[in-house]
Image (cartoon, rainbow, N blue to C red; front, side, top):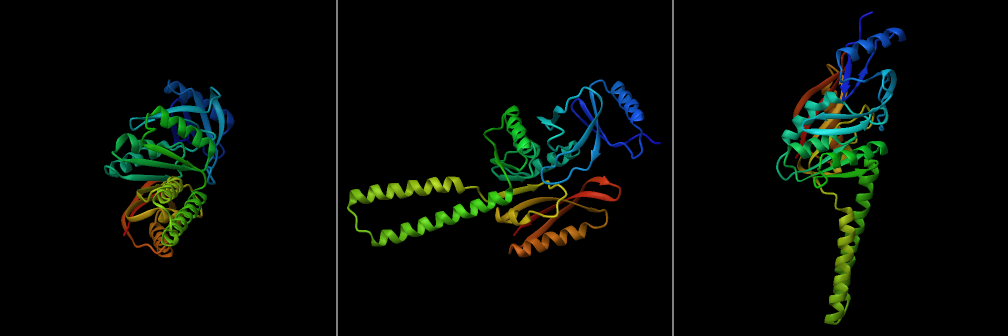
Length: 306
């Protein structure tokens, strides 16, 4: 049986994808040989299943070496600490992160959905002149490491975490914005009818303005110049939420998965979502972003909201 060819190096950990039928004794032998050839590798883990679901927790088993699953990994002038068993991180997307960072312009506000331990957000913060990067992730463990990584890379002034389900985050924002609109309308109507003294009017107006500012600050997640969506393999596109947080000329970098000859189906799916959201879009680029299985690829589709 041929030895495995697919493996990832993450700091001092190697994650190996053994072929089906590979005996445990052979796995141990292969792992020992791999550590001898690569002295920096002290732990060998094997992929025991596919990454699935929105939490994207990998299924890994220990094969040889130290029984540790926390790693310190470096790429693109950044450093990341995370647990390979409880959070998702792909070193194979390193060039993707670098490429997207190069596309971000000075002063832009950026949103990363499915941010994980914040590699996209931090690489953008360290390698572009973006004004602010907002990092959204539902996995609590990933958010814990994201907070640590923001501190390790000294980008607290540029990267802000927005933990939780993006659907609930957007829904809450819509609700808060609606409340603000109602308050402003009530304020406008009350000014027409109220007969106040100059001193009373000053006091009342100050109170109303402060109240509105407080609500606005909580609801003021901006419309973004760029939205990055390194999606896992899910049925839901989450483009509905992305479109709600977009504005004219927003660029969206959308990741999906398909067979090698089915890229057009993904494009059609995006166009249907745009039509449903009453948005016009222009497809800018379709790029193969890696092979994940025989004849199955990860693709990135860049498009602009018109």
